[in-house]
Length: 520
Image 1 (tube, rainbow, N blue to C red):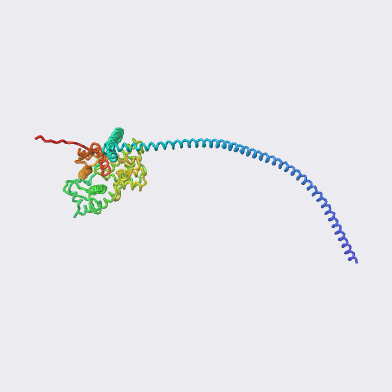
Image 2 (cartoon, helix red, strand yellow):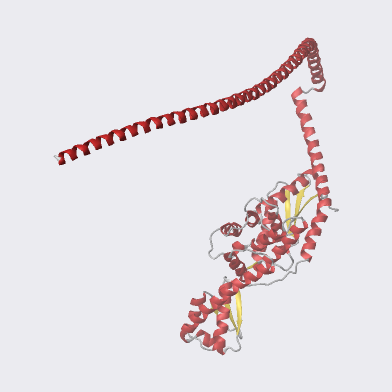
């Protein structure tokens, strides 16, 4: 019983405690809700107050923005109105101007109409007068035909022929005056430049032949050079490509060949063999090969030294080698390297006198005959071959044109080209510079005389002054004085176009009348 009573008491206590706790929670909840309500109302009132402040600020800002936009809009409107007013003013001015122009055009149109009517009237009068004039002209022509006994066509032809002859005579005299004036003004200056140029260049001369004479101390060496059964000399000829002539000439052996480089290799190789004393086929091949390398090195050294002496830079190594090969090449007895140096110096001086590029002219002068010393021998003129070599090794177009045109193989396109051509002729025409073969010299003189004989009226021709002057004898009954002048000019042009010659050729046409009688 006690246990049950105790349990009942504890249950009541728990229930009471739970009720009290629930009541406490309820009261706390009610108090919390009241506090939250007050807090919420306070926050709402503060927010409303703040919102009101913000609203007022935004309204003020909106008003300010509205006023700003209004002022800007008014400003834009005013500007547009101003532009519109200006445009209207311009339009009004243009309308006024256009109206004035229309009035002016109308006035000019009226004037043109009046002028046209006047011209029409005058044209009618002119046509009438022209008809009357034509009628009078026909009457006069008929009268002249009756008086002269010639038709109008015949009389016109006679007049044309007479005028033609008179015009020819006047034209020839005018041409002669122009030529004389040109000679007076240009010949003096040209001679000064050429003479000054030639005086400033020291001309060296090296005459090369197709043979080289190798001197020996005694004729006993000839037998050693020939060798047993001619083995040594055959080995020499095979190794050098040069014909070796051992004859009765005392203390001399002749090396014959058209290639100067090969002759030089053979001469140097013979010198080393004779000095060494050991002459046999194997030794010959060894010495010739070493000598060939030495000559090639010397060719390069000569080319470099020549370029340095002339102040020419940037030459391709192949071109330098070809310049060095010029030392062993001759043309009409004139050493090609010395000739090219002369032309280079002459071209440089002449270009400087004329105000042109002296360095470019010197370079073109040195390389102008480069086509004479190629490694191969194509069937081309040396000027064209030299031009192609210069193009291949990236020389300037001015130099390429000067090389290709110095014998008129191609057209000259630069001022340097004629300078190189003239200087080439000066170097070749210098007394003692070249030695022509007699046969070719005689052939050139014969061609010169035959060329002049082709013209009608020519009776005799004489090439004199070593081919520097051509005397042409014409018949007095077949050629007039005017025809003689014309003939000399035509022969000169023909010689320039068809023949190759050094310097210049003077053409003299002689017209003479001979009266012959016999006293018996």
